[in-house]
Amino acid sequence: MKLLSVVGTRPQFVKAAALSPVLGKKHDEILVNTGQHYDYELARAQFDALGLREPEYNLDVGSGTHARQTASMMVILEDAMLKEKPDLVVLYGDTNSTLAGALSASKLGIPLAHVESGPRQHDLRIPEEINRVIADRLSFLRFAPTGHTVENLRNEGITEGVHLTGDVMYDIFLKTRSKIEERSGILDQYGVSHGKYILMTLHRPHNSDNKTALQEVMNGVRASGERVLFPVHPRTLVNLERFEMMAELKRDSNISLVKPVDYLDMVTLMRNARIIVTDSGGVTREAYFCEVPSVSIEEVTPWPEVAEAGWSQVTGADADRIANALENFAPRGPRLPIFGDGDACGKIVDIISSLEDK
Ligand code: UD1
Image 1 (cartoon, rainbow, N blue to C red):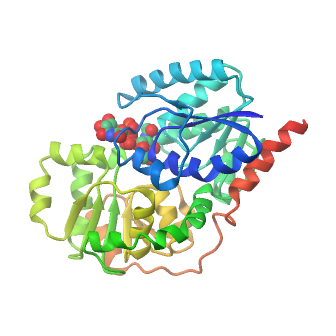
Image 2: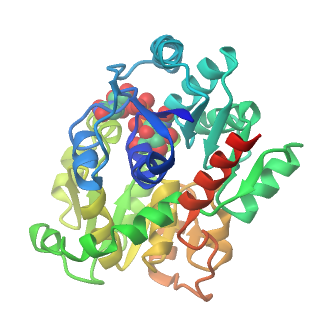
Image 3: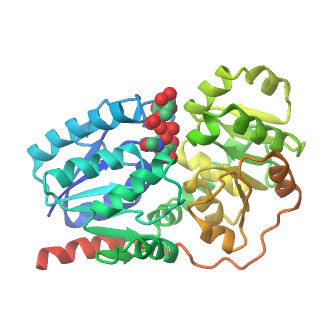
């Protein structure tokens, strides 16, 4: 079969690095990078670290308002789809690149396969939630990573084409584990040692574009007095400057702002952290893979299974709750295989391949 896969942001490069090589063994895959993420640290550095192959199409869509960004992606994705005439379009996650791919393909009548179908935060003010709901509704194959994601789809009346496969992010984590061991130099580079620091990421618009939320999170981690390593997303950096919070942060010796790091360095930093503070769904899951507890600064996490397993505490952007979690939260339960057996990609490719017989 001829497949066309759409990527464009940092988490999608990670997911495609898991699935694309497995898909490529059985099918002809055209990889399209929308260019939604264009900074070296978010894009090219990830390709290099993950060994993701050069896409057939590198579009240059860049940033913009949601409508402008999504609309320009739709136009160029439509051109690529008309030219390539794929049998199936493969989409990942919940970004504007996912949404644009879903709309362009479905308007052309091309069936869609959605990898990471079903997570929900039950809040349509979150842009990713809008993207998830639309991509899931329009898809023909829905690859759900966990039991909860299957349940969320069922609650919306979606039962057809739903396949519980496990999480492709767990596959790539297992696959790259040996390389991660080799990256231990990153700890020296940042002057941190095993189990002796907090790792933090923050980039969701409701946290990073909101001065009060940003201040609450900073106050919460500052109160710990522990060393905090904070690879800053470009969006968050712009806002820290806009809200005039940089001077205060620079004075603060316990929070170190560093550039975003590539996937292998990031997982190395996660594995060695005492605890992780994040609003990223990907990092919450990866913390669990690494057997490191996490604090979710989301009001509602899209991955409640990690909290239910006793490995994450959900605090929202609330300084006192964050400080309390950093002081008292300790993981409780055994580590259940909630994200599958590490062969989500094999299952996805088998399901796609079975279409050929139909
Ligand atoms: C996007 C996704 C989010 C994903 C995240 C991972 C959407 C709606 N959001 O959020 O689901 O978890 O990527 O990082 O698709 N910017 C740069 N350099 C870049 C990219 C972005 O400076 O390479 C800045 C720009 O100021 C831009 C802002 O970040 O306006 C937002 O970028 P955007 O691509 O809209 O979303 P992210 O916040 O990165």
